[in-house]
Length: 155
Image (cartoon, rainbow, N blue to C red; front, side, top):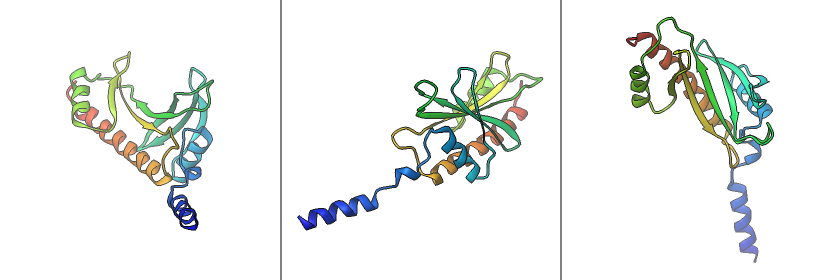
């Protein structure tokens, strides 16, 4: 019996502390972004769901919340940004990006301008702060690479 209790205690002690994990709670997510050195302004999107406005690589971006219940208790997020450009990229250009890059899905909006998005799944307990910070750094790199790709691509 004592051995079983010690085994359970050892398992519990080695389990990750989900209370410290980053989840899709807007206030906690904003705090995690600020702790990683990013600005994070809380707001709401056009449907009333939470939204965070920030910036990386000299580009403004938003964090959109998905799988929400009554505009709260969200499960996933999406980083998203877009550019208004004079020369609109061709669909083939965006397809080339999507084919050659694992992170960040490029798209063309209804005005023909390029944008990029990256989903982050935070349900089932979220992720560690360090992993979330790594995702933020990946996103900042994606923004920078996509901006250079669009600027150097044939239109």
